[in-house]
Amino acid sequence: MRKTLAILLTAGALSCWSWAQTQNSAEEQSEKKAQKAAQQDRDRDAANPNGNITITGGPNVAPSNTSATIHWTTSGRAATIVKYGTDANKLDEKSAQPGGERDHNVTLSNLSPGTKYFFAIMTDDNTVRTKGEFQTTGAASATAATAATPATGAKDNITITKGPDVTPTDTGATIHWTTSGTAATIVHYGTDPNNLSQKSYQPGGERDHNVTLSNLSPNTTYYFAILRDDMSERTKSQFQTKPNAAAAAAAPVSGNLAILAGPKLDVVSDRSAIVEWSTAVRSSSVVHFGTDKNNLSQTAEAPWGATTHRVGINSLSPNTTYFLQVESSQAQGTGTGTKSGKIQFTTLAPGSSAKVNPPVIPVQ
Image (cartoon, rainbow, N blue to C red; front, side, top):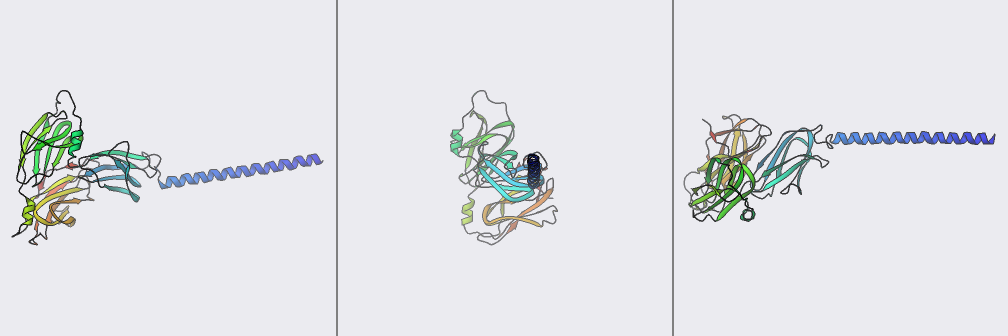
């Protein structure tokens, strides 16, 4: 009897223990499911950048000499995180904005002119959503040009299809040309056509080439040659810088302020544009713009004090025609102001690469 009772007690204890283990296991599984659901609610595509949230526009890059703005849109609210650097395998710089957005804009600052940068748009769990690259405007240092290794062998069959077109100022000049294929961007220049001792070089290969020459002398003839990567000459030409605008600004001024050059479009993308113009004296920098040429109700501006004015316009709509008029006022020495004639431009389709120096269309 005692033996039978002991067996029954043992069986009962084992049954209770088994039931407790089953309950604990069910609770653990329920907790794991809740944690997984919470993670999915936070960023449902975190583990799969090609999953629920996708990039629907861009990324589009609008670079300048020392900065670049990257814009993209997503199908849902997502993190705004960009890693970047000059080494594609080591993106050690980071720019992030708090919160989640569908329309993303990130501005990268303190970049080097004439330099190729690589970037990656990240999810909030540090997974790469997409990658890209861009090159800042301006000229790389002469050291970089000297360090480049010329290619050897026969000359390429690439031809210049447009230009070179030169836009000079008093102390600088921008040279633009296009080629039939990807080619080096190398310019040698100087004041002696037989001794082009100065160099401007941009790494990588392009079809659309822009080189900015700096620290030139006013009112001076310069000669230049566009070279292949084996240092053979592709074409040559010359230009003359403008008279010294700084001297004009320093001298006593009489009469009304005038716009010397522009306005022109430096860069146009699907959602932004950069406008440039110049005046003889320091003054304000304001752009009036809108989609109705008779109602330029929106404005963008830069700080007072420039003679070469450069203003960025942001938050534009893709595939849309805009009209603009620039204004400079509070001129140094006279306090006068002036406005330009109106010009128009059309933003690009979503996802299109930004255009540099597009044609200027006057408004009739």
